[in-house]
Image (cartoon, rainbow, N blue to C red; front, side, top):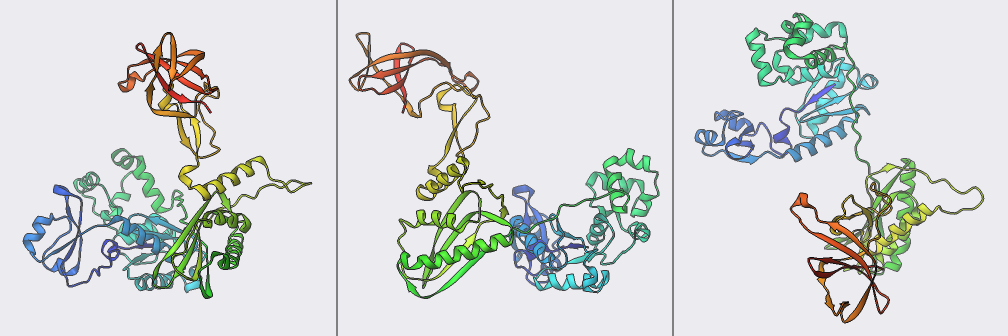
Length: 474
């Protein structure tokens, strides 16, 4: 069953296509702007799709322009796809404004192939969207029927060829070049194209177009990806009074975590993010978010992360309700336990440490470093997720962790090198590093490891007769 929403651009913005108000949606920018859709009120004034805004305004000075919003249309289509799951668990998105529903196993629950169309039309109309619904044995044939607003039901492949043969070529949404070729050949309906020799069609229009025809007629398979709605879990508690202390809220938070984790287990899933919302009277809610490096559904683990985040929280006013929201549900991979003792692997301990540090310090402040395939000190490493294994060489020269943003000039006096009055001794080097000439840099430096009299270890370099400090070793 194909469900097409021909007026989706208007309806996604809450505009009724049958409105008497002259409203036009504009797509494109500047000289390429054109009328993409319009209401019935604008159509009665002579406004046509494809017109320039200037020409439309000359016809109807009172015309109201609105910008087309593809993101709103996509969001509306996703909402409609969720409604399509009332009829079947197998729903495919057909951008920009259509859905495909596999109903072979569910049509009988709604009275058959004909009645399910009526149910679908009423269902989507209740959401405020006009729909064209067609049922056919193959996905493409159903889409083509809906494209030309043929609300019909075709149940067998034996009658499909004759039904498709009556469709105009516009049902295939041809490119302008292909449409021009159809007109020059005198092909107005699909039946006239199907009567042509297959090798001639492939030679003139390409093998891919011939494959499209075969998929529409059921001669070739036409698999579609099944859309899955992003799932989330939530739990809430209305408190018996107004609480101002986090200590008094703690038992309710623990109960919410247990409830949400039970729901995660019911879905056999985990999540890598939780949001705890404190609701106040006549004030915006207070929200605390925590994340986990791996999908998790252990309430004790989430409680530990939340406590690290709540340690510095100050509630602005009393709380009358708590709400716990999960991130997107993800597949959960259970960890193998030790046969003799309950102990975590080193990898689990590292992940737990990263989660606690991020909950306490913030996600942006906890990261890893990976070596890059670039000898320049400023480009030799990059920040990555903790635990990330660099794809570069495993033999990286020893480098200081603390690099200065700008190299600091050093004093060279009496054959001795000084940093803040402290003499330095070169203990390792030189290591020649040349700048990236491919990016307009042109320098050649000799780097040394230097030791101060206080025991500090520095990374210095010599360039053009001068000495500079580049960084400090830990």
